[in-house]
Length: 337
Image: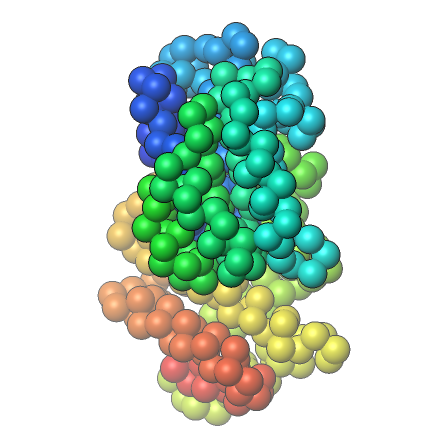
């Protein structure tokens, strides 16, 4: 996949494109950011760009990019290019020193069929300590014609000596619209399913894909009901009844998981309500299918109320993650809203 086809992260892909065009790509890079946001795809796209046989210029605003069609691009996409070496965790979620040593022994020679040899290390935080130490000399003084790209969601796990030898690029979370686009384009989901899953994804395509077993439509209805039933009611009893109604609608086997999803959906709705109250374009909403309901709720959550409610939902999620009871969390939140 060429850089221009990456969803999101345009600032970073543009930076990579310019560096490759100028021949100034750093030989050691660390892509750090949340899981499932596309770090690995950007790493593969960079490997294609530096080795493409028919590179293109000024495509979709990028000064330099891979064609995505030549023999080199095809072999990299299929993982069979001899000069693009990918290291990934084994079945025990680790990358061992023997594997790293084997790769490093191959970097002592000039690239065989590519312009540059690219070593991609996925989830670099799974490198064993000995494996990380074996990398140090090569990261500090990379062999001629070799680039190392490490990706990780938890850079703090890496040895400080490894981190200090790499230029770090920070990847942020995707917007709900970007997640939905990726689900439709790359994973064959319907637009409706993608639009429902995106607000629950926390900006991660990987997390969105893990939601396939949830009844997102039903959970979305519970989140909307919670906001609607607390919007105009000041008495505590009515609010507690709203919480009881939400808990009753959760799956008994997955009650905690379902409630967490309801809370994330409610948080997404509150963000949209705040956007509506500030006069933002409706096209930026994470829940476009709910625009009419959200517009109605916006009147009840005017001023600081939406922001304060969002903070309450965030605290409720934290309490749930710390094993607080689902009924207690739901009731506390209903009172706070």
